[in-house]
Length: 277
Image (cartoon, rainbow, N blue to C red; front, side, top):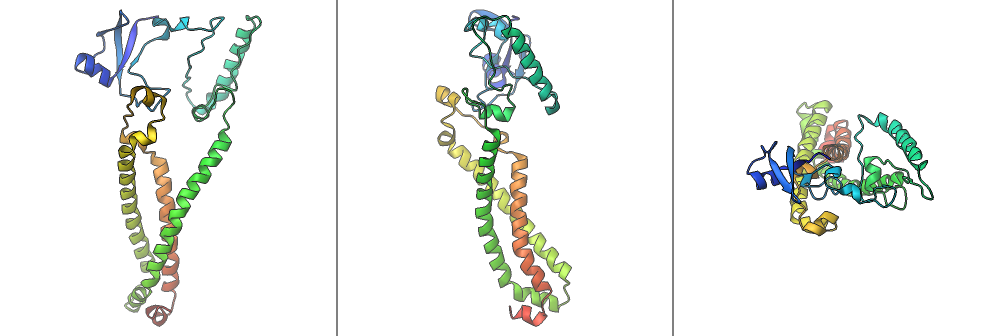
């Protein structure tokens, strides 16, 4: 029940003109709260984490919002585990506490519908059913494969066609003493540079499109519908591992589509290569 508050940076600057607000007082619903910390802003799209001010629920009277037997309905509890290895122990303990709590109830029972969830399962949970995480991941995998495969096929076709037109060039380089290894390194370096430039351009265009179409893409967010704002930062949009995986896949397809014809040309008779036979 301590009257302590944590503010986001924007709220702190709006109230005090600075983020150095620890120890100062803010009044909420005619109650003075001491600022215990200031944190970075959280996007309104982070529905479960977004707030401008955080206070202990026991300090704001939220514990009065119970259904019966002091069961808290409109609240979520979030448990931060040290590692995923602790998940099973946490589930066992919550189940033990649930059974112990139910022993003191009459005519009613509290049940968790398979919770606590992992973060991924929570995102796809519907209150009436447990999350089908394997099914969700399978659907995402199919979509990602399609999104990667279609442009990769187009990319490979373009690269293969370009390499076939360069057969004469490869033949001339062989005639002047270039080895097969040198030809392969040239092809690899060229495709690495092209893929890197294309990746940077594609990432920049995706950022531009996301910010330009912000309202269209994110207007269905509950917080966005209430406040009309969906502030995003570049860090929220970029998953480094997803970008690296997509980049590596495109690079592999590009190298294969260019490298195989280059490898075949490097082993061909010089005359055949020059005449593109």
